[in-house]
Image (cartoon, rainbow, N blue to C red):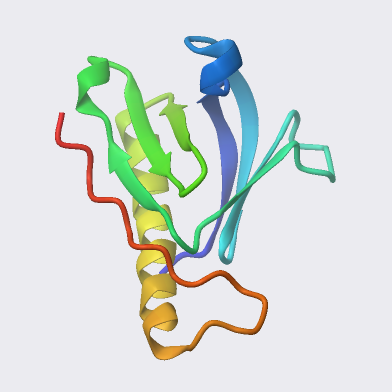
Length: 126
């Protein structure tokens, strides 16, 4: 599976503050995390989404928008791509990473100081 990918996507702000505001961010998928940056030239991410305990789902309710959701134990991230193909490429890459990580998780006991595995949240049924 492809574990490196990068490009511009739109991310909705945190629910408490900026619901409905889409911000353009440069996303970089590297191994087991998805970092996002204000610009593609930034070296320090403004956010990191660890992919070890997440589910990734398309949200068809958004009409013509190519929106998908990354559900972590802390927060749901709404991400919008600019085309169907771009969205599918990201979904494919993210799901590939997530399934590879869940296979690894089943083989390994948690390392000292690591949280116990949290049960995965099922796909959104709405």
